[in-house]
Structure formats: C-alpha cells, structure tokens
Image 1: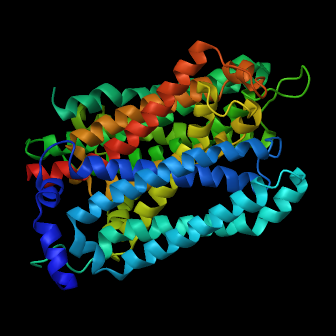
Image 2: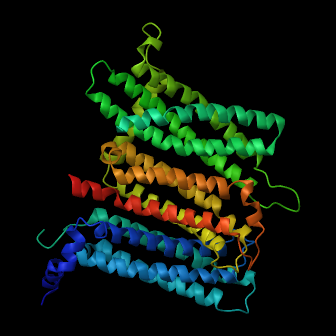
Image 3: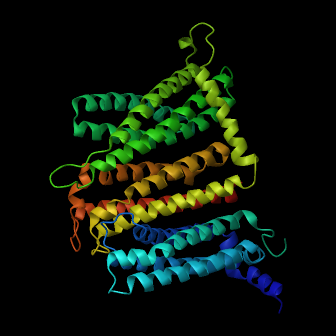
Length: 168
Length: 323
C-alpha cells in the first residue's frame, strides 16, 4: 500500500467523513474549538512561566509555578487527540502541505525546551530564585519564540494547503 | 426584531456614556476623589465594550436602508466614517482607562492605596476629549440620515466623517485585497491575543477557584495588564476582520453571541479584577482560600473566555452549512 492509498482509505473512512461533513454541532468545529482551547492552555501557561523567568511579576515565587505544568500537559494531550481527529478528517490537506511538517518540528523542539526548563529550573531544589532565573533565561526566550512559531505555522495551515482532499 | 433595531438600541449609549464619563472624570480630577475616578474609568471601559456591537450593528442597519428610497447612502457613509474614528479612539481610551483602573485594584504598600500613574490619567483625559468630539460628530451625522429636519440649509456632510469614510475602503483594500498574507497574519495575532487572555486571566481565575493554592494572588494579578493587552490586540484585529468582510459577520449568529459574551466577560474583568473590589483577594497568600463568591466570579470569567474561543471558532461553520 502506498502512502497515497493510505491517505485515500483514511479519507473514505466513516469517521473521516463524519468529522468533515456532518452538520452536527459536535463534529469538525467542536474539535477545532477544543484544539484552540488546548493551545490556549499549553501555550498560555508556558507564557506565564516564561514571563516570570524573564522577570515579570518578580514577587511571584518561582518554584510553586511548576504546578502550571499540569495545565501545559493537559492542554498538550488535548492537542494530540484533537489534532489526530483533524488529521483523520483532512489527511491529504495536511500531509501534502510542507507547513504541517514545519509545525510538527517546531512542536518537537518547543516540547524539548519546555522539558529542559522543567528539569533545569524547577527540578533542582538547591537553586535560589536568582539562580533559577539565570539558568532559565535563554530557554524562556526560546520557548516564547518556538510557541509563537508553532501557533503561526498552525494558523497558516488554513491558508497554505494545495489539495483539500484526495480527489483534488 | 430586525438587526437594524439593535443599532437603534445601542447607538445612543456610547455617545451619552462618553460625555457622562468625561464630565465625571473632570470632576474626579478637580475634587481628587478616588471613588469618582474609578467610576469614570470603569464607565469608559464599559462604553469601549458597548461601542463594539454599536458600531457593528450599524452595518446591518445600512443593509436595511439599501433598499429604501429617500435615504442618502452618502450620509450613511459619512456617518460610518465618523463612527469608525469615534470607535478607534474609544477603544484606545478604554484600554488606558482599564489599565488605570487596574492600579486601583492592587493591594498597595502598607495602608496606602495604589493609584494610576499620572501619564495614564493624562492619556485617558486626552483620548476621552478627542473621543467625545468624534462621538458628537458620529451622533450628528447619524441623525442626519433619518432626520433631515436637523440639517441646516445645504450643509455639507461633516469633513471628519468624510475623512473617516475614506478609511473604510482603505482598510478593506489592505485587509482583503492587497496581499493574501494580511488576513492570515491578523488571524495569527488574534490567536496571540487569545493566548495572552487565557494565560494571564485564566491562571488567576484558576488560583482563585482553588487550584495552585501555593501561589500568592497579588503577584499573579500583576499579569492582568497582559490580559488587557490581549483583549486590546483582539479588539483591533477583530475590528479589522469585520471591516474587511462585514457581510460575513453581520448576520452570523455565532458572531453575535460572541460579541455579547465579550461585553459580559469584559465587564466582569473590569468590575472584579480592575477595581478596588479586588483588594481583599490581593491579600490572599500561599495556601489561603478565596471566598465562595470570588470563586463563582472566577469560574464564570473562565467559562466566558473559553466560550468566546468556541464561539469564535464556530463563526465560519455558519457560512459552510447555510450557503
């Protein structure tokens, strides 16, 4: 089976057709809404952590902020589930668009940076706040830049595709 | 109720509200009364929210008049131009007013209350004066449309309105026609605004609701101006979408609900997180529990902002299934 015949089979599956064409309130737009909410959770909470590491709201103690990683991960898994459903709905549209691979790559790097912040800044309890900020500074800048890249690449998916489905 | 009715219902409030707000603000500055300052800044913020549906409902009214004889389209365009300029200055006034108001909601050092910086007060004063003038012109040119008896002689339409009327096609050209990239970049910025709102306001709401209780409230509240910046970015980019393609939005039910939700969520943000009503909450330290009423307000705020995201995402669905 070639790559294209797999795409065609997914696209003709009942689930794919239902997400794409159902006028139900809980089909495509519902999933897309949760995809936006997951972004708000994962990126919103990351931005709060990054801003604090960069010195905004200095009175906020840094170490209890690690609780926000729960929001980040909940948002992330919501993104994975809704993202897969959206991919099932429009496999050709996404997989034939180079921007989709740019987005996935940026997500991979952004996650790695996020894990690194968690590990270097939050998991070392011997660090003072000053040391935490110093260690996290460039990582926080990278995190902000990468998430902006992910959001931009994701948003552009709606405008840069060449094929909408297998038959053209 | 026709869409045009909404315009009649809403259009007087921003004009009267701006005048009352400015009068109140001047008195509060002269008498140096903090409560009065808060009231006028709150009124400016609220009017900035109401002005959004007031402007947008004007497009529906315009469509209604398109088929009616005896109504001058020139007068309507002059009015729309004046209204757009008034709206832009109202939104800037509202943003400064909300930031100024936010200062009152901070706990402040010792017993001394926190107050807005002089330059914020000066900015609100300057922009509210300009807004008042533009609101008066918007009102007058709007009245000319259906009340020709108030037109004196062969009075030419307002030059300010005429200048504003040129802005509408200018924005339409740059947002829709100039390049295929403008719209997507604006959408991207609209999502950046969404992230700032959910990040700044959402995390504070969750803390008040009882999550992440190790975090003290006052420093989290310092992120609120970033949330306000997010709201401002999204009002500006949202207005550009609307001006770019008004027929796409004007009759869209999801869009209408979204605008209603924005007025409520924005008012909630203004009343509870940007006035001295927040001060008792700002004193909550690590581990402290917020009162039940505050938890309810926080939960409703979070629900409204998430509902706004959902309603926004559903806007294009109407076009897909009904046309």
